[in-house]
Length: 115
Length: 360
Image (cartoon, rainbow over all chains, first blue to last red; front, top):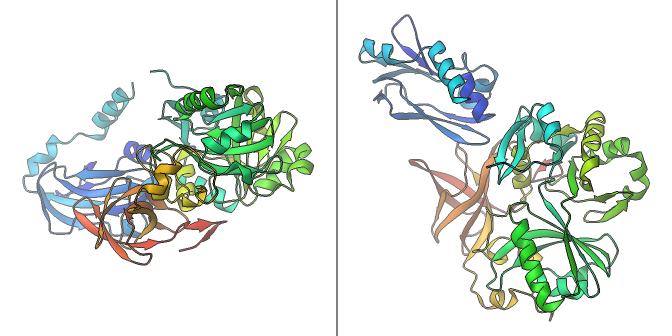
């Protein structure tokens, strides 16, 4: 999941739907600050008791921040996935943000897959 | 494909279980949080629906003789009624068909509990062998029975609360002993490394008994926590730590195989002659991450493989069972390939946890 911020960066994390599917989180590995990412590149990992899941870069850009709290408290993702963000990325091309799905479109997709 | 259901299916759904396809059975993975359920069993008491496992009754003259030949462990260790024994069922080449618990009831009746996914092939194998050696035996698959495991330091106290009539009969039970109590069969066995019981009862009686246990404060536990509990307890899982291509000596189960007595059994000749090049050990990950099944283990003595890996909620770090070259020693450090990295893990003796306490 990516959320656009007013400064043009994108905050990346796990959706409520994904945390429910994965269950209790026990490990988070974020990309290093300053790392250049390509869109759709595997750049982070979350592991629950059950399984590992790769996180992909939503757009091409550079990592400008990581939530280091999560390495000691990955369970924060389960408690509140939308405030327990993982990393921030500054897109090379600001217009790339418009290619991302908004929350309403995502929910529609989740609902359609549930049926 | 329609999934098979236990008699407690509706109860799981009513309790908010996340249901999953578990080897063709519709089973509860968790009821909210796998970690909370794990701790509940280590610290208090929890109950598991294990009705997908199969009870097989073997009855008739000469049943002990037949089992002496059929099983790798020696049923002559069972002399008092209700005594149980863990054993492998082997192919002639030593591969493990299944692992099971056998209960001696009397010289005309032994009861066997086998895994769900292997039950049909196990029974077919038993019948095939009995046809040759003991055609007088009756081998009955007890699909009419449900099974509920109650596990944890407070399992006994809460079971007596739920089932007062059983207390007198069952409170003196030592581990790996069972007793019949009306229509129930109560065994002091389990798959968690805690005190507790596995109770077989008529399928029709299972939902109300489940509810009574719940009312006594025994919380429902899903198969997710069942797996992390058994891994911490260092107990093998069929299909992961051993299967038909692996013999028990390479699966940490030499203690269950009797090669000392003169008794012959299926698979014995192969076990005696095969060189032992691999062994099962415990691993504790030294770096951050999670060990998983099938990750490759690199050592100075050659490569091995993780057979069961997960996160240990009790130890708060990742642990695994791994099959590695026999020459690797306890205390050595090995490297595990996780994605694009090599992470250090320490080779340890297992179990990792017993009776609520970490042993590492």
